[in-house]
Image (cartoon, rainbow, N blue to C red; front, side):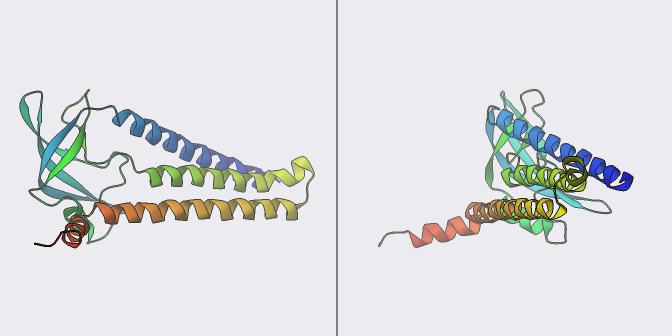
Length: 199
């Protein structure tokens, strides 16, 4: 009983932490929509690596209040623009080609802090769903003895919750991949060539 209780406590704590991260990124996304924006030139990239992850930052140049500012743009959620493998910088370069112009969100409190993207909605959804999953897992450990319900019923409810969460997370992942493809310069060039009228 004690082991189940400690496991449920740990899962609940982790779930609440994921909810906190989800809420923080959601508030950041809403706040960034009100930030001033500027057209920035993409200058280059740098790769920051650690033992478990790889992050690619983008160097941009833009005008802010009459002066030219150069800064490194990072992901607002810290999830990085590129994947955690050797293709990370190539992925970023495809999305933000060197020498191209992109819109950046300028932090009014710190103009040198700029972001090329808003906090990713699919990441926010995954954090929220992960919190729900952990809370549901904790409930399956403590609900039978506390509420006097059968373990089979609790397990069935958990499996239904898990199926719904997986469907939601899969849907957000599919939408994120589709939007990533639509934003890619190669797709936009192909679309323009395909819609060009006769000469």
